[in-house]
Length: 169
Image (cartoon, rainbow, N blue to C red; front, side, top):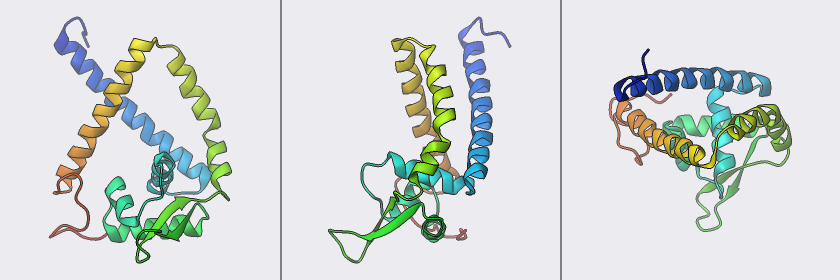
């Protein structure tokens, strides 16, 4: 593929992004297997670790793109595995908040040590301006990907719950 012009460069980036996504999906599956989790469960644990505060199950549904029923089952599995705990919401006792537990967090964190070091070594190859571009691309591609996932599910980003004509699952 020629990348001598803008069209060729855009095509090369699109191909590289698809390959990167496939490689990351395989990595995610391998990491999930290592920890004895489903890949969606691993992603939920990873996303919970990025949040500054515990989340409601509804917020987890929105974050993961799952229906509320599927998110509840996901949290149930993670709770049985000792990875998350539910606590009453201090502002609304009718709701619970989900957070990572301290019990299995070290095991999950340790599994990320070697991959984290490898990705850090990769990023060390880039200068500050390149890292800014990479961060911007990743942030924006995440926004676009989230919007496209919502479109494919037939709902707008930021809405929760089951849509008419869809199945829980």
